[in-house]
Amino acid sequence: MHHGQHRFAALNMSGPRVRQMFVFLLLGTAIIFIFTGFFAMIRAKQNSRSSDIGRFTSGLSAETMVEVLAREIPYLRSSVQIPQKEGMASRLTFELATSIDPRDPRTFLGRELPGFALFDTEIVVAGQGVDYTDIPVESAPPPDLEEKLAKDAKPSKDSGKPGSREKQAAAGGKEITKTKRVFIYHTHSTESYLPELSGENSPERAYDNRKNIMMVGRRLGEELENMGIGAEVYTKPFQAKWNRLYQASRKTVVEAMNQNEDLKYFIDVHRDSKRRNKTTHHINGKPYATIAFVVGTANDNWEENEKFARKVHNKLEELYPGLSKGVFRKSRAQGNGEYNQSLSPRSILVEIGGVDNTFEEAYRTAEALARAIAEIHFEATPVDAKPQNP
Image (cartoon, rainbow, N blue to C red; front, side, top):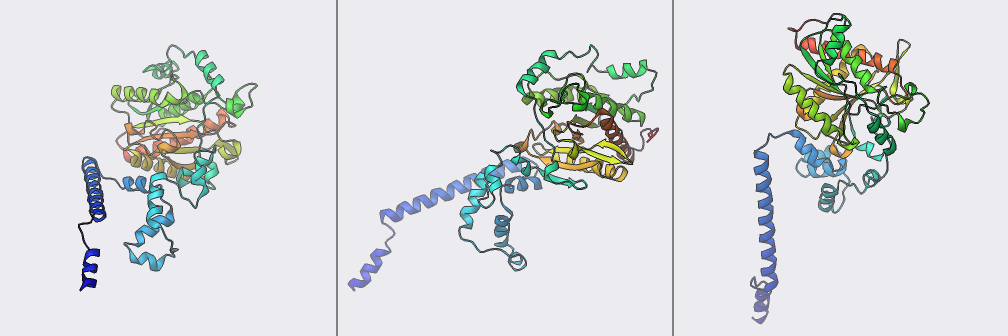
């Protein structure tokens, strides 16, 4: 009898430790429901996208992801070899919170070692022979050179003003297309090519106020005009610190969109920081500056922009095999991530050549890009005038 009473006392639910445990359990459950409800409410106000799940799970290693899915999909356990490991729940929590995979040293060092973060950039479509060593890289000029460029910047009176390019073309007797479909600009307008800079051989200093990427953008606009697509080229340098240039160029793009509702494509032309062996491709014996397309995922238009970039890449592969290095996806963690691409679903950033290419090589690529865009445009918009000399 005494023994039975002792067992009953051990299960007494009124003890202070048991009450404390239940209080914590109830509080924990309440917090989970609050956060779940809050998250559901936020998501209900936005369009659901598959990319949301992708961004949420991007910090997970493939092995952890498969382990999680296998708990709900038994087929995975029979078809995929999954190592049995303890502590899956704690590892899942750790990887989601830190984006670090304890079994992959790159995730520890990627943010600390220069160049290591490149492995976070996604290669959406790879060109011929392209791997992670071909990923385009943005680099700022040294502080002293940036200061000098800002001090010496002297844009021409007409440079960048609406209609300035049209006036120049009219003065030269060239017929231009009145309806402007393409807006071309250069966020990093001072990016240049070493062979074009007298006495300069350091890739870190391949920048100039006059001989720069804007000359390539002008050629791209001219070739589009020749093919029957009206193009407006903005050639005024943006007055801002390097890390604020995208905000400055964004204002210009918004202004252009407000002034001309016919604009359909927005192209930000850049120059890559890679050396010649990574940025040059020969076609029929002629050297071309390779081209790469960068899509930022930190905006709601990224999937449409990526689709457009894929189309241009595929068209270049068809017309100029090997010229395009591919389409690269960057989040805010690997760079700006926005690139003004939230403004339009047909907005792309293109890298034409690297520090060791020449204007002649970059011009050939600009002509190729113009042809690819023209063919895509006229396939989608047959009511427009046909290209004169595709």
